[in-house]
Image (tube, rainbow, N blue to C red; front, side, top):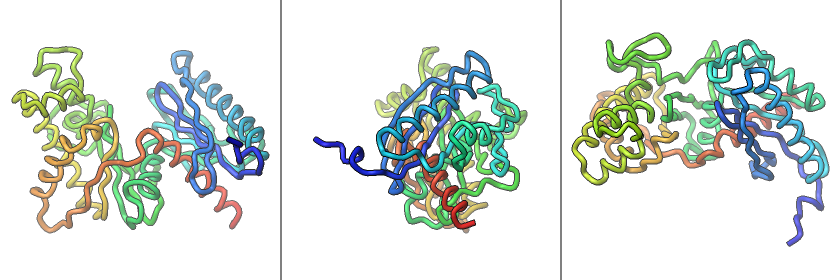
Length: 319
């Protein structure tokens, strides 16, 4: 079969989703088609400067691939990274798992990519942008995306865009205190939602309850489905804490759709059936939103970075 993309010029953007251990990347068309996908390690074991170099090299490689395959260079780039960001200045202020402090990532990428517009965003918010605009929340005017994985973080969506907050740290629902005096959290508080309801927290609790130090959250979900009362108890504590945190978010934001993603959401109805019930039981005057699983899987971050790049290009064109 002839690759039609090789016969015609195809306008596209670079999308990079940078994680603690690996990077996912794509070239994305104007209609959000994934034209090319690739992965690389972040090489964080070599230090923060090596991580930045790996990102710049990967982006440059993607630029070359795009120009070679689609007849023209990418028109913009979007990058999602973890940590605290100053999106207006394009600076990665702090990222503990990458060892970063005040990295001018947008300026570095703009220079490396020949001056094209570059947008920088938070990795979870990029996943939320994709889920809200073209995924599980498509068509919703207001949505809340919550990723329940090793930690818990969220994204607040309004009219198809993500609100980063006044200081770039909106959506940190994992640090709502749901059990005062509970487990210590890395943020300095005790009893935060992610210390009790993240996949990591469930894994720790189930490892203790089962006596298997290698057990994780997926093992717990499997044991819940088989009716193990110890697993049912651990799972029930998680659902209770998660529902308490989500209801706080719903009360503040009044979304039409609540999208739950991340590793724990892979448990499917083992999570969603009791979670929907627990949230509904806690509501009084609040309206119950649709509570749905994320739909885009691990491509959400790249798709969100691509959407951000197209948004950035549109803003520059109309400015």
